[in-house]
Image (tube, rainbow over all chains, first blue to last red; front, top):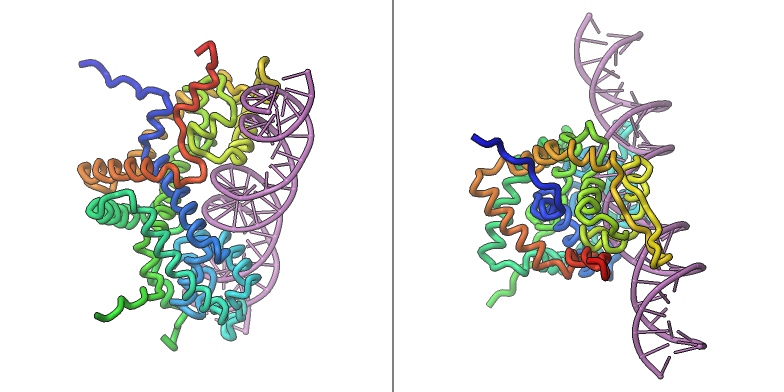
Length: 170
Length: 170
DNA sequence: GCCAGATTGGCAGTATACTGTCAATTTAGA
DNA sequence: TCTAAATTGACAGTATACTGCCAATCTGGC
């Protein structure tokens, strides 16, 4: 029995590789997001952080990173920029001097309300080229794959971590 | 007829958004790639660049950026790092003083041969959690979507640009 | 109560990504 | 031919991402 030949070393193999396609699609997604939201000067990451803080007021940076599955180091500078734009406040926690609690400012809550239609348009545009049934199929598979690969990522999603900061009050 | 209610402002909407899922999946893909290839000290982008230069020896940086759909500015530093590792050579083009032609060095060609099995393992691992039929389905839809969204990305893929540098000789 | 270990946030360093701008050079059109 | 426009590579500036490291702080076991 002949042994399997080695895979050819050509760029065409890259074009069909999952990793390459995920990278391309992510770049396309960011590009569409920025185009639809250019009036708001918010990046996709900043948007996700605002939404998460809105959903979990008083969360701290470490838990926030678990809730949106973003690297903690990266998140530090993201929060800094949101603070500089006056969308987010950081308050020291009375019971733990290490922790700083995150809250939306009035501006932060306002821009969130205003940007949502643009974000919805962006999300729709990303899938627009596919037939509706294919969109559902793709999203279903992607949700599965991301979930099943959760532990493989450096910062696994831990949505339930958000509840911990509520402590005895929650 | 009642008007459609505004979408809720919660993190759960983000979890189901295409843009968020593409970002997560890309991060997972990079994480898996780096894990499988940690013995080689090559990033996914550097790997793609090496493959492309191997496929198109003597390509210049601008055409290379079109062939792998990476930003030209980013690619400059990528090539610099590959040059520092002695995987890539830059030679001035005799007929156009602006252009520098890219070639793999012996080391570059060697590491490419060696890393391929690890890359194959990484690509397989990304899809492993899905059933084989679902992997095919997902890849098929993703190839379609990336292709149909090509113009929406800031750096559209122009695989055929690679042929231009051959000029009269090609 | 004390101390080892964990947690938190911050920092430095590297590597994509993208937006602009710029000078050198080439090309194309008047 | 002469010049306006295009091309190429380089650079500066911003924003993710990740790896490590660190000091301050808290917690749990003794």
